[in-house]
Length: 150
Ligand code: ZN
Image 1 (cartoon, rainbow, N blue to C red):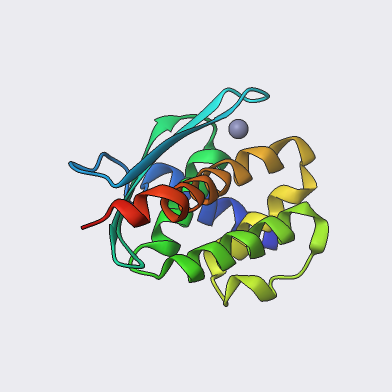
Image 2 (cartoon, protein in one colour):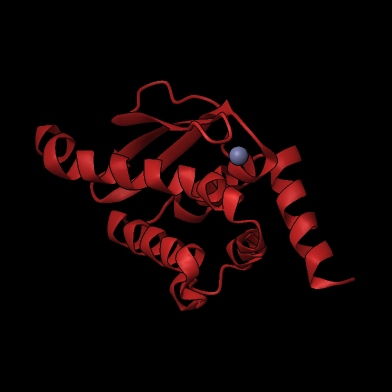
């Protein structure tokens, strides 16, 4: 099996069997990301427990890359502290924007598989969409939601 096939297999698996797809009953923060170039839409919602992303779910519709990336992203950050999720998002953005280093991914092989997308520059925005939504959620939580938690 070539590396290309491996990339495709991992991405297809997440696309066809998305993790954490659905809705949260009582999210603390939610947002919607949109990639007009491709028509991708990602709805993202999180439930916080202190500094930990207790639960996360995504919805929306779009191409296989955007949906697989959303599935991988939710799986990667669920149960983790916000600081770790934020660092992972930065590491992934760095990788996809041409950094070329997977150092920031903490050995997450599924995410590493997404770097095959870099060969198709148009699709990089698809892969980044859910991560941009995650960073927006973290930003919002840190500026407002965090303080209003009881
Ligand atoms: Zn797309």
